[in-house]
Length: 296
Ligand code: MN
Ligand code: MN
Image (cartoon, rainbow, N blue to C red; front, side, top):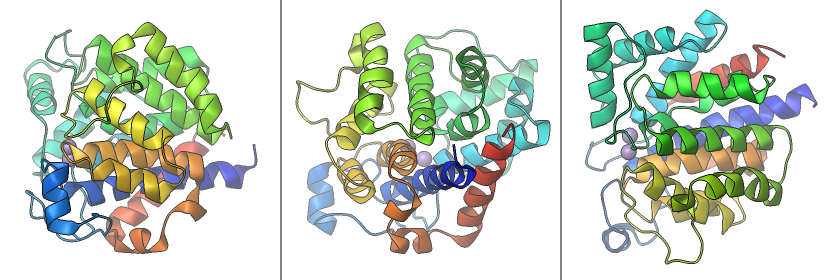
């Protein structure tokens, strides 16, 4: 693996996460019909949305990932307690948005000091998955058992549910396969089909295109998989994803990390990179490089 190509894909994945988040936040909780009426096709980073963001600003999906990435760099590895402290500090910084399961998990950590929340049937949201990219980058050189431990350590600070675990691990496996230069066809047959064999609810073909995806990890990943595997470029994948509305900042963020890792930096429209708030863009680029350099 040429170091520069790995770094290039890592940076693209991190910028993809932030771009998908920023693009999707404008239309979060809107229906496709409402999006069409307001914007035609929404494909410009313009801020607004229910959070009234400034253009180029991102939401919890990106800022939680940055908090997690920072904790990994400080520790030199993925550590559940350090991740919990990072999320706690992140919540104290008054983020623009925060999911219910994430809030509950962090409050529980404050009360108990335990960085692993007990299993709960309510924890099948997409909050552990949306922020997981730094773990994928930091554990690229590790064997799969260690990757799995690291993924679950960060996930279970707030989410402890088999579907959240499986979906989050699958996204990490996919990102790492793209970092290693695998094709989309290979990733579909290896990582995605393995997930669906074990957890059939994630099947994403044979039904209608998913619209208005909720924060349920199954809805989220079905939408992301449909948009990612049924388009052929970074741009088309993200535009298709966010225009389906619903939890669009999070589907956008996950689609963005996959499409960035898959298609690389040169596939990302320069206008979208330029539209990101400079501190966010710089933090994503710097973390991506540092995280893949951890064990290289
Ligand atoms: Mn968000
Ligand atoms: Mn969201």
